[in-house]
Image (cartoon, rainbow, N blue to C red; front, side, top):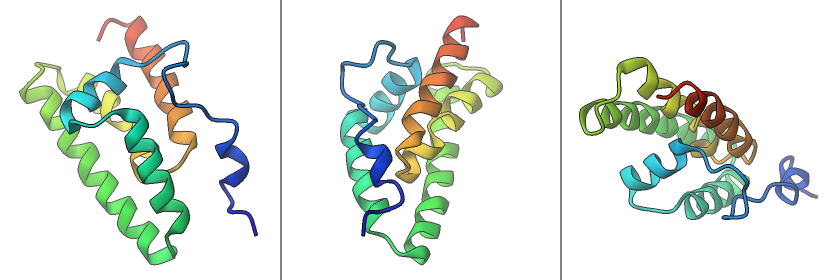
Amino acid sequence: MESETGGLNAAIDVSVSCRHRPRSFALFEEYSGTSIDSTVMMRRERFEAADLMARREMSVEAEREVSDFSKWLVRVKGFDFLSAHFHAVGLRSLLMGLPVGVQFAEVFGLVLDRHGS
């Protein structure tokens, strides 16, 4: 039986071929020390293999990471609180291992980039 997200996986390409690579991707890569591509692949594999309890734990872990990333943006990069929050929240689904997180992060990136944050 194919996973619920299996059909989406084929349609999503997170490699360098994306026309617009959101600034939040580059910032998260700097923060985490890993490429966004590796992060997405690893988290997606974990999410698809996880049972309900493990997915809940991944959700808590992602929330913590979003918060830590947001604080890092303020402390290290000098972002104001709201800009940092939106850059971090735009990556929440991606950090949980949900493939659609890439699409959401791209939308947040486009909006934030246009408003000069």
